[in-house]
Length: 501
Image (cartoon, rainbow, N blue to C red):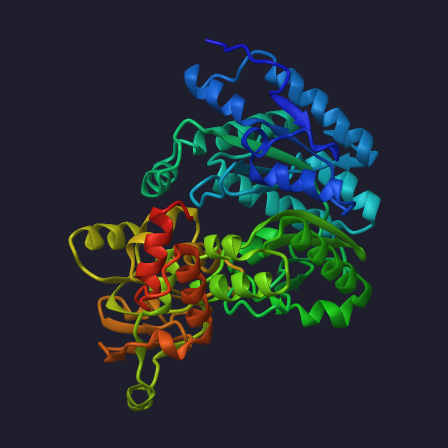
């Protein structure tokens, strides 16, 4: 059965601000916002959330007319780039991304370099005089398509695009996506959009690369920008954690003008959103392109620090700052920490980068499904993986801590754990933490270390933290109760009950 739809099904993303987040999803809406602000973004179009709803209502059949609308929208990308999708002269390749209105781990991973075929590989090799680049791009596409779409890519670029779009729509009802929505009370009927964007290539030459930038440090809340840069790379390498990205200072040293342009764009986006931004970018032959911007996932410490700093800077008023920090985040700030004297007597068996702070003790397991099952049985488990991907999200949310052997502070494990406030250490080294399977361990994600056995902890005192003291004072003022108890978590719970977020 083919389900009819209306003209809002597939839309070019323009700078006119006509697309809503609910219709276009977070990724396309962010692209529209960047275009409106004059920030360099590769052209894109979006298959809207209404297509997703109609697709599932019609028994997983694309609505009538959508295929024709996709072809018309692709013509917009061709006109904007001077390239042709499926053509063997100046071929156009695209990325395909899922994008619900609310950022949601568990959806389909991105497919990059879509449109690649043997003939187009030859065309890229001829155009760039670099057969190795063309071969690398095709290899990346083939491996990613098979992993994400779960089939060998056909040689017809339009058939590739159809399969990728359907895979995004199907991922809305994947087991992991359903579990995430239920855990957070999100609407099952909202649907996901599909963002199709012209490719720019971080793997093209020595003046190319990819990276992630946070307008403020998502770990500490420090106002200095924070990010990672991977020369001659593409975005999935940083997100997956399989590549060792460099600190952002490396971009400043290699391409100082690009670094300056990136920081300027981050300031504009933060000021416009009035919130900390998580930005994905690619540099192609010395030219900067921003691919995505969204509100940054941050640790509880960073949430508090950013709310206070933005209020002091006049960006937020006190009421808005109070709504930026939840009772659960405040509770996490008052979790126990390890006693330094105990740590010195029990040296770490693994060490990496702190991705989300906290202390947790449990048995180490290396399989996400096992972690979920054992947690459901009441056992405290630490999920240890080489890297994580969206299939691991349910197990990550069930674990008391997550540790990985590869990846940095902008990898999948780091970003997801920050959102869920799960203690996380990344980049501990190959065959380190997975070798601890079955053992009891304590993760000190404040220090980025893993210790054998259960180590004793000490409880922090809110009065020792000036940020917590200030925040509690704001809460008492908002509640109109200067005599309220000093327990900042209880104050926030009362604030939420009275209408605060």
